[in-house]
Amino acid sequence: MSEMDDDPEPELRADAMERFPVPDYGDLPEDLRERIVEETERAGFTPNVFSALSYKPSHFRAFFAYHDALVEDTALEREEIEMIVVAVSGVNHCYYCNVAHGALVRIYADDPLLADQLVANYRTADINDAHRTMLDVAVKLTERPTEVEEADLEALREAGFSEEALWDIASVTAFYNLSNRLAMFAGMRPNDEFHTLGRE
Image (cartoon, rainbow, N blue to C red; front, side):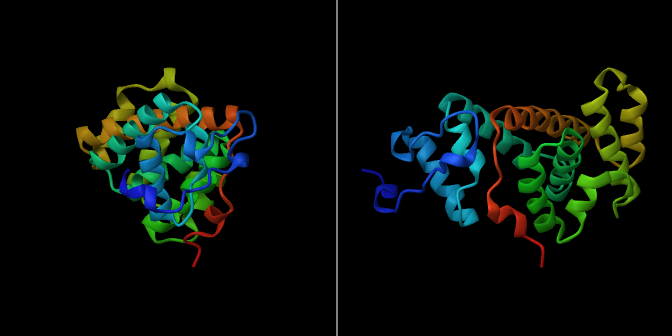
């Protein structure tokens, strides 16, 4: 018996996604249950993305392993990662990621307004020139990937981003295009708690 067996079980919300069934927490493999407990303790609630992706455990593992690498082994600041996620999710109209990562932008940037600005139109958001260039490239890679060229990479270099940061900008953008599309296909719904986080 593991230590987590002594704690109350998180409840995976059946309405975390509309188009596929959400499994029962007790039916999940132990490693998924451990990760969900960690995230629930960190957030104070179980983010619905964990409930939804539990539908297919092997994909849950791969998805969160890549997510963890993107946020832990990076040349970007965490607020920059979340800015990319929200700008990309804004142009993709991904409700789940707009709301969930909008909360993370507010928290990591310590700015209650920035996420809403980025979702509405990142070009008019209160951000510096380097971040506008970063988001220009991320949105171009999202909307018109065949048009990305060396000049886009050079613009990032001139804005002060390292070669590793260039790779990371593209990787975060690509990953969250995947995430947006999966969330929209499955009908993932953001937790109500995300709407109010970081607004004060």
